[in-house]
Amino acid sequence: MPSRSNGLLITGATLIDGTGAAPVPDAAVLIEGERIAYAGPAAGLGAQAARVIDARGKTIVPALIDAHNHSTFDSDMRVYLKNGVTTIRFAGLNQDAVVALRERVERGEIPGPRILSCGPMLDGFPPSYPHWAAPVRTPEEAAATARRLLVEDQVDALLVVQQITPELLRPIVAVAHEYGRPVVGQIWFTDARQAAEIGIDELDNTSRIFASRAYPPERLTSYRTVPERLALFSRGWETIDWELTRPLMEAMVAHGVSYCPTVVVHQHQAGIGLAELEADPDFRTMYGEAEHREWAQFLDYVQGTWTEEDHRLMGVAAELRIEWMRRFHELGGRLIVGADMQFGGIMVHKELQNLRAAGLSPLEVIRAATRDTAEELGLGDHLGTVEAGKLADLLVLNRDPLQDLGAMRDIASVLKAGEIVRV
Ligand SMILES: [Zn+2]
Image 1 (tube, helix red, strand yellow):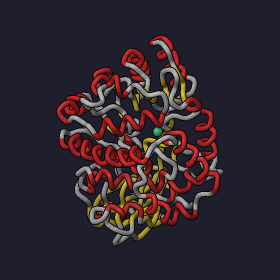
Image 2 (spheres, rainbow, N blue to C red):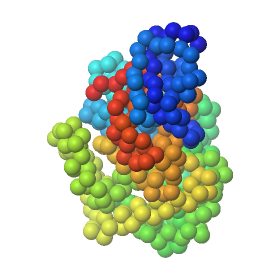
Image 3 (cartoon, protein in one colour):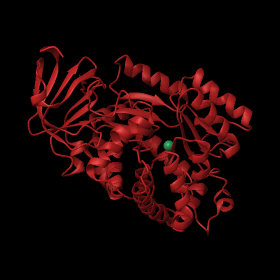
Image 4 (tube, rainbow, N blue to C red):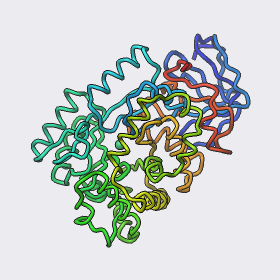
């Protein structure tokens, strides 16, 4: 390392590097261009830098990632960055919309995070979300569609949803892995054990990671609309059989399948935390009519016909899913982070609290939201930790997040690829 750097040196902070290692007090992070040149004890760095930030009393952590989102509003892009989320992955959307948004961010027209995409959802017929779906009927069609998305649309991962059966999943996984890209599922017609054995990489939100004697697969798949399916989901969870569920968890752990719970969206659907969200300063000031209207329309589509009881049971299901996460984590399963809703820059921080409630230590929560999520996105070589050689995506926090995870949102500076972000 040269003794005189043209880069940016952040010095004096405590460093939590995202690997799960113990914090390093009085650390230095030297950034050259987009990447980190040094991260470690200040005493170990013999270089001086052109620009120095004195960060004594502060804590450096890797920037956050939202592995599952849908909103393309400019406001959401801005809120993500402001709240320390420098990378997001769209989980099922028209790929042209994602590409257009990504180009605007890359040209600097709007501030926003780094954008990855799963492209449209691979689903059976009829697809649950017709505007966001690439429906397939046969294994041959599934393979051809998967290949088209990976080669022509250059998606970063494939997403399989509700009605993808094991027969359709097999060729999709084979094609994705041929191109070295992951397959993410939120599947209903294939359970977690089948998906794990076929080789899926990640399961998200409402995937069938549980089993219930009262709601066996035939009953869970007997819906006609999205609200009906989600009502069955809640009832299935309410009657979860932990003995039947354990082999599903074990198969995920054995095959290295991570889980992105996105519990926040289901808590929101159950009416939990609404007042807190409405009081949130970013929620109040950074969104307009259009964003609120779109979210209301989405909620109407997914739960418009719910009864009071359906809302209540969704809250029960969210609690039981946190218990599932606790058991999965104890078995050595990997949890990652996503919000699955608009206002993601706010809601990701609430999801960190759900991982904490599932028994992860604050250090483990930070690792889950940074290194582990980056690895699941296939970006482990470039993002997710504050280490030499990685992209300089990091947060300088005003307080210690190991004392209070809420400090992850008490941010002095956000850096994305070595640049201090201004929103
Ligand atoms: Zn989603």
